[in-house]
Length: 86
Image (cartoon, rainbow, N blue to C red):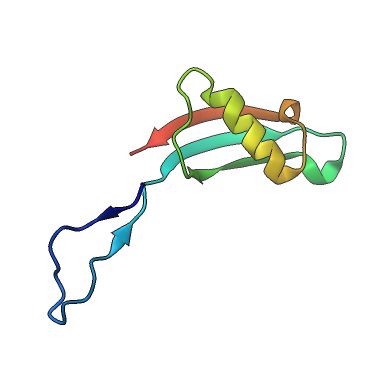
């Protein structure tokens, strides 16, 4: 859903600026476990998603998304810490 500002704020009368839904940000600390040395690492930082994770499955869903980015199986991702950044 795209939201538009109701009042024009431009002195030239330009069209209102469109904005998209806010993203969901999570501080994540995780390790990638693999038999290949190039994949055995510890990572931490903010992960930004276009939608919030489902509360009940947040860890499993994030593992699946991270694994896809690292070209690993979800079982190779171990999340140590996960917190929503507001």
